[in-house]
Image (cartoon, rainbow, N blue to C red; front, side):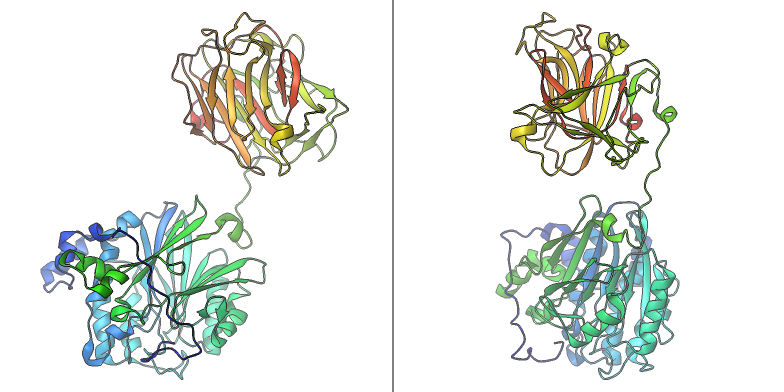
Length: 616
């Protein structure tokens, strides 16, 4: 607990300090920061600081939330030492643009006794953030106020220094409870609003009602709840933390992450809320470590594309002293790398927030919106009841007459599905159930006489397809099936380089689920091949093969793959035979049938830019 003595015998022992073999961040402070860590002593220096405004990027999908836990031993009566706090704040300012720092949260117990001189001293240190306009929150811990009181305690030195008056006018300040001890703060990051709800050491009935009201007024905003006491150790909540969970956190799905100090060592817990979603609850406190924790900070690096929060713990004050030489204890504390201090939280943000702020599904787009100039074939598979069998002809919506006919093998079937890539124009797909040995399934082929059968695309082409492989996809039975293929062999076309039994063109999936475009260009005897990377199961993917008349590039989700050949590649050889969807021929005979779902397929007789792909 946050007391002036060691934890009770029944509490967990402090975590051992992890240490990496290099000082990753020592160079980040720079010579100026290591030489002088005090606040500016003159109005001129303060004015210089104020000119360097804090401007995080609100649209970036990578951003950082900084956390500073209990600093009480640094502000304890006659032994006040603000340098470590100042060093941490300067570090954040110095790294703010690189980290895209959006907010700082202090977790309470700013001081040891809550005395006026202690509170004033740390208040002056935080003035550095005020001068730069940095958004931050603080809250009262049991050492900042009388621990037996709730947020209805009335005036205190803490409230004088860190009450609502301090935050009014700040762009991130949302408001405070009437008593002034609870606040909420809003910032923009990743293109949306986020909230930090900073709650007092002990909530009164009025405090609970106020917090619930704030959440009700911001029903679609994800919330990081900060308070001084909640998690007491790994997988353990304190008695008060349990009440806070039951009365506020459990029933409000917006709260996805909580941060608290008070206890040590650092730990984590996960609880399932009333909506059935996990809430991450983190304990961070280093006051038991060298120099009272030296104002260590946690960096919560959000990455909305990778769906992770990467967490790191560093001591900027010790980092800043490294150039002058560190003592033995400082060398152990410069950066913590144990499992409780450096870790990654996996969180699918869209799925986690869908209960209170669902991402609207992209509407279907009519064929007219995607029939770009020089479209020679466009097939889509929406408008049918799930599970019903494909029967008859699938029309080419380009109007070019490249219709598709059904071919069955071994009694196989082909069915309609409403499943689709989220960015697919048509909200439907075909479900193929191919199987090798014995060969079974169904696929589609262009009708005899279709113009596509003889097209050679000398001036370039773009071939696009959406696909998804199921969980039971097995390379032993399903590998090397074609998404889109041209029939006719190299041997039949007089192109005997490489394997003459391979088809003239195929967009296939390898045994490692790598998309591959293998084609016999008009200007080559052999096969030109583009390779993509492994694509996971149960995920929709968009592929595009683009040839500009000289070179071919394979794209996965609009991203070029690494193995795109540099040799000149002109057109696609033809012997006038059909194209296949979901089928692959070898030696002129059907050899494999797709096991998976195939969405919209479009072929255009020119190179398209990425911005014109079907998934844009």
